[in-house]
Structure formats: structure tokens, C-alpha cells
Picture 1: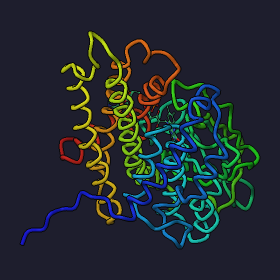
Picture 2: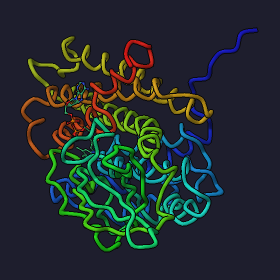
Picture 3: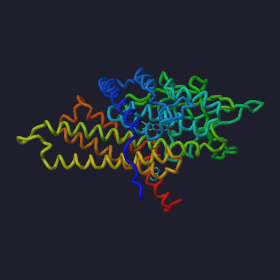
Picture 4: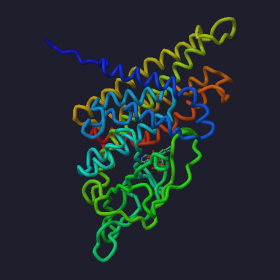
Length: 389
Ligand SMILES: Cc1cc2nc3c(=O)[nH]c(=O)nc-3n(C[C@H](O)[C@H](O)[C@H](O)COP(=O)(O)OP(=O)(O)OC[C@H]3O[C@@H](n4cnc5c(N)ncnc54)[C@H](O)[C@@H]3O)c2cc1C
């Protein structure tokens, strides 16, 4: 007898989805416009989401999580992005960039110290790889960590990181940073966990961004920043592997954000098309409009399946590099189209900051950039196909 793959969420996953949906609609939606306009990081809401378990869904119970797996984590991020992408990226980056590398590469002591409070929703973590000189080429980092002092214990970091999410909030506890540790100008990278407040670790003012206004993104300066030996995360000289391994999980998160944003945009466009009358009938009756909505519905269903599949592979401990890249590539480009069609269907009102429509439009674009640009993802997929080195 052949078995049929299951594409349905379990009862537990559906219950979690409903809990997060209720919270997002009740506690986030009423404030999202104000946070966006005032560029306010919603500390209290993020804390409440932590109490609900949103940060620890995919982490093992032994480390403060719910042990519910990567699919459930994707569902949580999707539901948040359906309402507010700034909140979704705060959760997504915390989980994949802050927590995941520690789960995968941390010592038991590092997991207890940094992962447990993160998974419980008490603190936020960040990962700083990108530099002003470039992000796609991870190995080109110029931030340096060198041994210091006569006894050569500890490391001193010097350099500047760009575009770091979650490093400057009231909840931020640490930032994982890549730095060159190769001797004689070698390019070997290592990763270090730098606690917030370490002298010489200087988060700068938040950027003024096109979108994601209520999320925290900053440049970070490391100026003679001294950390002890036990700040090293993973093997010395293997920092690129630490970052790139974590990145696969991060791409599932961005794919989930993209599906959620596209779903929210479709719902807004559908509702408006049914009530906006032009030429004597709701515009939804026009084939030019309802074909757009039908296309989006179909493509969102496909993006969701790609996303859940890559999450399911991750959860099963199977390779998922190509699947995560494909899900993120397809879903993020779809999110940009969905946000644009939503605005187009709203006509002139879509251009006015009195509805979520322009916010969704501004929030969508970064999804094709962060955690691997569309160009880099096509390269990742081509490499998995054996077409390039
Ligand atoms: C809001 C926001 C939050 C972010 N959060 C974080 C974070 O928390 N931590 C972090 O480390 N980074 C973060 N980033 C950085 C993000 O990951 C980078 O912007 C991204 O990886 C691209 O790097 P870059 O901006 O330096 O562009 P570049 O690498 O300079 O690329 C510029 C352009 O060239 C293209 N390109 C580059 N190389 C190739 C190639 N070989 N072939 C074809 N095209 C190529 C790129 O696709 C892109 O279109 C964030 C960025 C933003 C905007």
C-alpha cells in the first residue's frame, strides 16, 4: 500500500496557530500602525509573546523551549507576519540568529546561560555577520579578534558590523559576532558570544529603514572589546560554518514571514475588492481583479508547502539547505508581488498611510535581501544542483 504524505497541520500545531493568531489580532493589530509610524520597538508585546512561548516553540524542553518543532515555529512566525512583519522578524531573528547557533554549536554551559532565557522569552539574542563592506560574502569580514595580554587568555574584538537585528533593545542580552582569527592576516573566521554591556561593544543608533520600522536594526562597533575564552562559539576558525549552518534555519523563518505577509496582503485585497464599487459593481467581479486574487491564493499555497516542507526536513534532522533556499526565494519574491498587487487593487487609497496596505508594501522588500539575497539563493540552489562550485 502506498502512503500519502500528510500536508495538514496536527491538532497541536493548529491550536498553537490559533493562540498566536488571536494574540496577533487582539494585541498587535490595534497598535501596529502607531509603532510603524513612530518607529517604536514594542518591548512589552515582545515580552508577552515570550510568555506565550513564541520564542521557544522549536527549542527542546531541556533548554527552555516547548519542543514543538520547526514546523510549529514556522507557523508562529507566519501568523505574526500576517499582521505585523516587525514583530515577526524580531521573533524570527531571535530564534534563528540568536538561539539556533547556540543550540547547534554551543557548549552545555553556553546553552544554559544564553539559550534557556532566550527560549523562555526573557531575553533577545542577535547575530552580527554583515559589515559595511559587504554581507553576501560572509568570509570577507574584516572585524578582527586577537589574543591579548601576556597570558593570552581571552579575545579582543575590533571592527564594525552593519544591519544587526535585535542588538539594541531593552531585552537584548548578547550578540554573536563573526571575526577573523586567522594568524598572519589569514581569513579564518570564528564566532563569539558578546554579552550586552561589555566595554567596547557599542550598538549605534537604529537605522531609519524603508520598512520593518518597529524592529531594531543597528550598526555595531567593537572597539577593543574584550571577551573571555568561553565566549568562543563553536570551533576556532569555523565561524563561517556556524553562521551558514544557522542561516538555513533562518531562511525557513524568512520564508514563513513571507508567506504570512503575502497572506495578510491577499486578505486585505480580497476584502477591499468585494466592497469597492467601480462601474456599478464591486471590482472583485472584474476578471482583471479576481484573476490576480486567484493567482495569489494559488502561489501562497505553493509557498506555504515549500516552507513547511523545508521546516519538516529540518525537524526530521535531514539536509534542507536547498529546500530552505527554494522556499525563501519563492516566498519572498511572492510577498513583494502580493504587497504590490494589494496596493494596486486599493488604487489611490493604497498609497495613503491610513491602512496597513503601504506598511505591508514597505515591509515586503527586505524579505528578498535579508538572510541571503535572491541572487545568492539562486546560487545556493544551482550549487546544490552541481552546476557551480
Ligand atoms: C533590515 C535588515 C536587517 C538585517 N539583519 C541582519 C542581522 O541581524 N545580521 C546580519 O548579519 N545581517 C543582517 N542584515 C544584512 C543582510 O543579511 C544583508 O543586507 C544581505 O546579506 C546582503 O548583503 P549586503 O547588503 O552587504 O549586499 P551585498 O552583499 O553588497 O550585495 C549587493 C547586491 O549584489 C548582489 N550580489 C552579491 N554577490 C553576488 C554574486 N556572487 N552574484 C550575484 N549577485 C551578487 C546581491 O544579491 C545584492 O543584490 C540585515 C539587513 C537588513 C536590511
